Amino acid sequence: MSDLEEFKKKVRKLQSRAGTVKMELHDLAEDLPVNWAEIKVVAEKTFDAFAELDAAKRELSALESAR
Image (cartoon, rainbow, N blue to C red; front, side, top):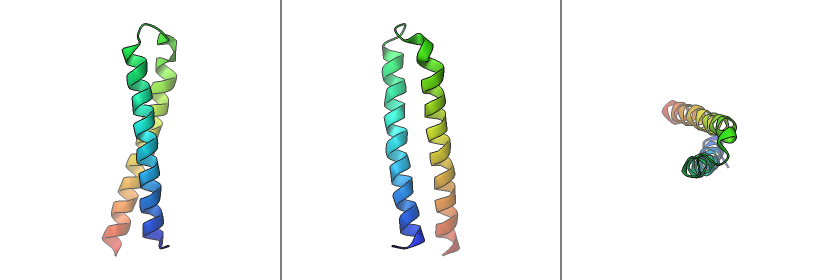
């Protein structure tokens, strides 16, 4: 498998992870004020997942442009 294909696979996995943590944050928000103390932890996990996804998408775009 080429590096580009491997990176596309990585981006898909990160997209899935980002979707999962997004729903976790959404569910937490719907249940407020229950578990309000977990907002910061879940929000940071969501932020980190989307930051990693964004960086991977930018890197994938650069790899595709270089071809």
